[in-house]
Image 1 (cartoon, rainbow, N blue to C red):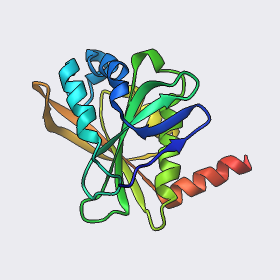
Image 2 (cartoon, helix red, strand yellow; image 1 turned 90 degrees about the horizontal axis):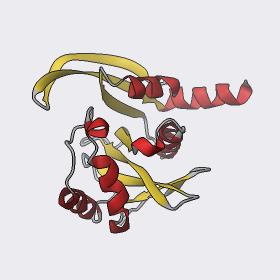
Image 3 (cartoon, one colour; image 1 turned 90 degrees about the vertical axis):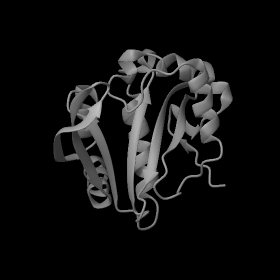
Image 4 (cartoon, rainbow, N blue to C red; image 1 turned 45 degrees about the horizontal axis):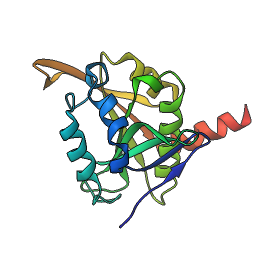
Length: 189
């Protein structure tokens, strides 16, 4: 089984485990957290089933979303989760997503997590491109993606029937060459 673990200064990105249930349910049951997500509020039973559904998933299975926990290293507590999916027909392409607990937002954890995931993915030999789809009303996520250098390359108008209404989405993307250029520019400034 191909498990991943990514460490940052403050965080550990690692497989979800049943010990995460309470913290995971806390934020996944919050309507404000799920507002722009592709899922609705979780019951405790749904949260447990979701965590259990992730235990046999392996990184790098084409087309399959794999969810990882984001743990605060200092406290040992789950503060969010992130997902990675490699392209179904080309594993040099990937899509990512992230959810952070409302108690832990505005502390730079989302940016730190996405930075680490981009370093990980673009560190894979031959990996080429990462995308993320975001609701056009999700201003915080849009600002996060743009602050990391993602490019908005698509605007899909009323393309998804979502939680009882039509919604619009942006597609953002980053190429490995863009990520490496951004990192080099940051080092030189």
